[in-house]
Amino acid sequence: MNLNDLAANLLQQRSTPDLIADALRKAIVEGIFQEGQSLRQDEIATQFGVSRIPVREALRQLEAEGLVTLHLNRGAMVSSLSPTEAQEIFEIRSALEVKAIQLAIPKLTASDLEKATIILEKTDQTTDAGLLARLNWEFHETLYETAQRPRLLTMIKTLHLNVDRYVRLQMSQMDYSERSQKEHYQLLEACQQHDTKAAVRLLKKHIDTAGEQLVAYLQQNVYRN
Image (cartoon, rainbow, N blue to C red; front, side):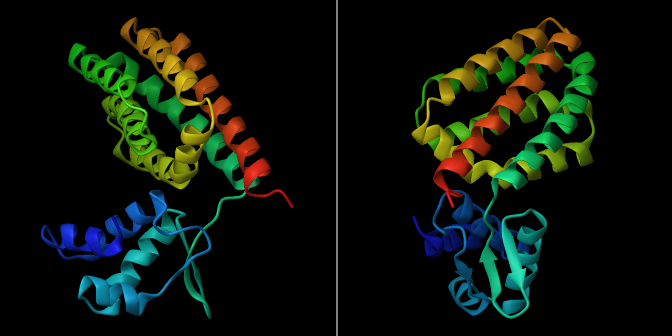
C-alpha cells in the first residue's frame, strides 16, 4: 500500500484536512514515509486532488502531534525521535497514564474489563507488528477512557503516536511483545481486583521499562554517532 492507495480509500469517506492528516499519519507510522523524508505539499495535494490549503492544515496538525517538522525554507519533513526526546515522552506518559488509571479503576465495569480481556486475547493470536501496536493502544485506551477525562486521553494518545513507529520496530526486532503482553495481563488482573495501588505500580513499571528499552534501541540503531 502507498499514499495513493490511502488517499483513494479515505477520499471515498470524506475530504477534509483531517482525512489528509489521517492518511499521512498512517503513512508515517507504517514506514511509507521515513524519518527525515521531505513531504512536498504540491505533490500531496495532487495525489488527493485538493488545493495546498487543506494539505498545509493537515501538516500543521501532524506537527502538533510531533510527527512532522515544518521548516521555513525546507518545507515539511517527517520528524525523527532522539533518545532524549523518547525518554521525555515516556516520563510524561508515565505521569499521565498513572493519573488516568487512578481515576479509571473505581469506575471500571465488567463490560470494560471484558473488552480489555478480548483485546489481549486477540493480541495473543498475532505476530504482526502493526496490529500489535494498534491492539496495545486499544487495551490501554479501554482502561483509561473510563476515567472520563477526554483531554487527558487525547494527550496520552498523542504521546503514543509519537513513538508508535519506533515501537513497531522494537516489536519486530526485539523480544518485546511477550514481556509486554505478560505485563498487560498483570495490569488487567489488578484492574479486575480494583486494586489501584497494584495497578499504578504495574503500569508505571510497564511504561518505564518500555521507555528504557526504546531509548536503548534508538541509541544503538539510530543515533550511534
